[in-house]
Amino acid sequence: MGMAKVLPEIPALRASYSTGRVLRLPVNITVSVSYRCNSRCKTCNVWLLPNDDLTLSEWDRVYESLGDAPYWFTFSGGEPTLRKELPEMVASAYRHCRPGIINIPTNGIQHKVIPGRIEQVLQAAPKSQVIINLSLDGVGLKHDEVRGVRNNWSHAMITWAALKELQKQYKHLTLGIHTVISNFNVDSFPELCEYVQRELEPDSYITEIAEERVELDTVGLGITPTVEKYTVAIDTLLESMREQRLTGVAEVTQAFRRQYYDLVKRTLREQRQVIPCMAGVASAQIAPNGDVWPCCVRAQSMGNLREHDYDFGSVWRTGKAAQLRRSIKAGECHCPLANAAYTNMLTHGPTVTKVVADVARSRVARRRAAHMVERSA
Image (cartoon, rainbow, N blue to C red; front, side, top):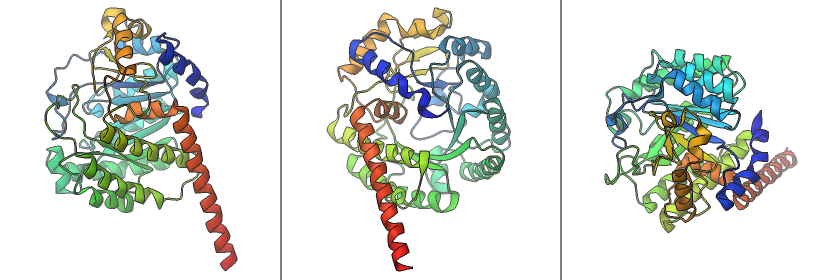
């Protein structure tokens, strides 16, 4: 399927942003399947939130209303694998929407359950790229301390080994590691970064900075590191990325990732939207109870799907939705939220140009290195 599905939609998304008119539904949807979670992270209080989850049949109607608009689905939580119907939810989204990418984060705690549940997901979406990101915030006991669960690390390592085995059978499975860089682990991040790259060998390693979010009930907790400390940590990751020799889609993805980390540093430093934010236009999040948000940082509802007969387009066109889009466009908020940022970058011409130039430079450097090896042979 590839990005060929989403690229033709970019002009309509840009026009929607410019005019304030809804010309299409979002290409990037995050579905919070439930707030239930078996982690007690220092950076997140989502497990304290009330549960009023949409049922599987309700979700089916939502996906039907979305049709083939979304290219990228993230099934988030809480801990998404705690929801037994997760494979059925993915199957419904796949049947109605045919997404190119399905992304699911997990804490890896339920090591006896998660591999089987993920295998069902893989079977339900055979033509999507399924990305499973294991959350790691430290090595060993440090991870358990940040996540607030004894033996989380050892259970996560068992889950990782099982997912690696699954990958031998399912070629559309991509395995990543995800780290939230916070005041609790920013100083020890280099150790984690080295361990992940050397011992776990993920297909991708992504980090996100800890943010104070309404959704996570973390406003005022002081979890976000300073830009100076974050820069030191992220430069460690960037250095390790430079050592990788990637080709094809992985190379382009890595180039976007480098741009994202630069974007985070600038956003923290300048305290503004560095590039236009397309949240509420190109991307959206659906809360477990059916509230539709432009993003999880503001977590302000455009409307509830239950009150709109599960028609996403109806909620997407409410007056409240238009008001939130105007606010975002006016720059009344700024954040380094990864999920929205990647959509923002893809729809931002100058950023795409930088990515193309980055890939071209790395390819030239590779050719020169190969030529030098040939000459010395």
